[in-house]
Length: 351
Image (tube, rainbow, N blue to C red; front, side, top):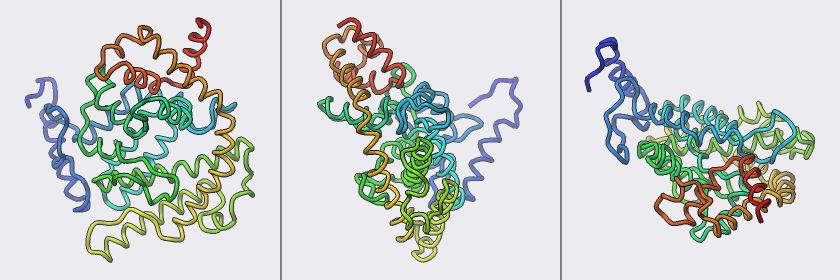
């Protein structure tokens, strides 16, 4: 690849040096130069390796910016310090990178997956996801929509053309609600993807606890005593305990097994993390769910409206392949909370 004459010749050496630095990673780390490639071939960047390039594409895309105005747990909270889907994403990326660095895996790949994992999330958090799943004939899962965002919806239908490893991690980050380590469905092919899946849980059980205390739904003294003894009483202590245990578990299993590290937790810490999540389900998420009927009503009304008024969909959605129902789902799932409410009020005023 020839470079413009204005660029210093040493630039062409940067990528080579970065690829050499990947050689110092764990033999079980994913390497950019060994990537399975992109959906469409393209010239390599002279400076950035492929996973770095994917991370940058995600950060600069529209769907990433919209996460700032999408619900994490609390809908339209009266305060500036509650998490949004964007701050959740950044916390996942920080936790995942810390783990990947400690285990000597690929930080660039880990960060790209973490930053892209929730791009397909709906307005109003999981409440919006549940409604679309009920209404859409093919069902709706935000991890599948996140992959659709990076493959199809971004860049005016061209997608971001990410590497296979990032796309795999985005698709397979979702978990069930029984055990944090029993993710349900397929496991990510890379250890970096597996780290992001676990970091997602570490992030939300802790920041949702912190936000629930801030909202007055629970008090710090309400937390199960066994959880406090195992993980600590503050957000900082809990995250620190979980991350150290995940890293220790990975390093121990690598040494003892003589193969790749296992991404997991020790039994006692896993039980404490699950106990905290069960507590949140009972004392926090159930209350939020009961109070979110308005959000569900908004998503339902928008879906029903565009089903009978498809000409009101933006033209770029109507022109996409997949049919009107698919276009409606793409449009609504991409809305921020605020835009969904504004559209709902506009629609209701015409009915």
